[in-house]
Length: 420
Image (cartoon, rainbow, N blue to C red; front, side, top):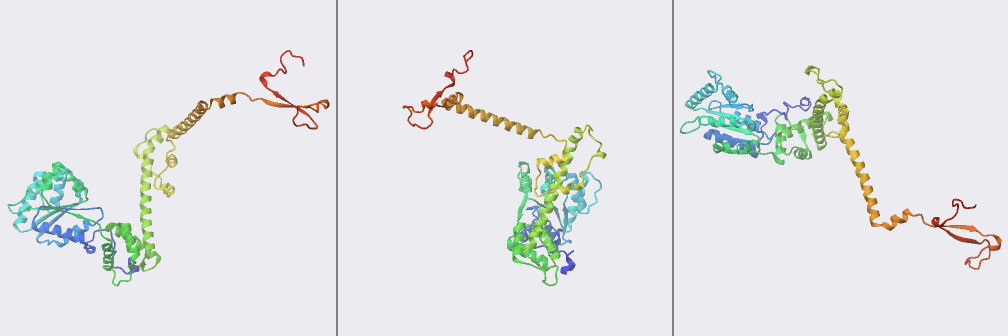
């Protein structure tokens, strides 16, 4: 899309492992030299491991291009989740051998004959096993047996294991001692440094443009390294999306703002995809319970409901889901956990209040009794005119009053049978 606008001969940041864009960092150069030496010296087994996206497959393709096809025959195996018979069939087909049958013995016999013939022609045979972390222990043991095909001076077949670091854990098992002892050397392919990341981007860009008109600012290059952590595959993703945003903006300079927009677009797309996958799994998992609640029972497979496309309208900013959202998709699900929590909370509140009241009564018994008995109170009765002057009254006034103390327990007013 942006190639014609920027005048590029090809996509500089393609996802495919193209050897033309192979960047020789320090680690990649060492790994390539390590594999070439082991092949030419006839070491037998070699191991190259690295994290996902560090460029193992690109390095493998570069290695195959550097080997002379007249002197070296290479079989590249990428399907490794197989049993040993299927794996052996892949090897035979990769080398172009036509076995007399499909049995394991027929395959081994044809492979042995091919290796002896290649050795007589002074031609090496290399077997590159990609994604080696997926190999089963029985297949690893079978591959070890292939290394027994040898002459008194060298191995008839060179085997290279390429995969993720989990492969090193597999061969550390106690039953893999014989295979581990035959490995001549292993190499770990790490990510690029900050300086190598900048060189990687510029070298790929300069391969597809005639003159350096399109460029990345130093802030953009630093931000790409910060987001990608030096993983070449992530670098390609970020640069490709950054060029798309640059094309939309109709500018020729990729700055840090365009890189940020590309990163947000990549992460937002992945979050949406993960969100929809989780929603779909929960929806399909809740369908049987919904049908049981409606009294329908299980339906045939061809009648099962599919997730409507309108689920995309339910996307919000949160990555996870809430209980309310689950109830929206599962109207037949029970809400007993929420009711139980409310009931338990109310019960605990009542028990706490009762405990506080009992504690107050225990520590303050006098206050508790005083609250139960009504306190005495006073009644003021106006005096008549002759009684205004009372010697005992400390505060004489125009209207004298007599203070009377009234206690309910001593009151005789309105007693039954008393005259009014």
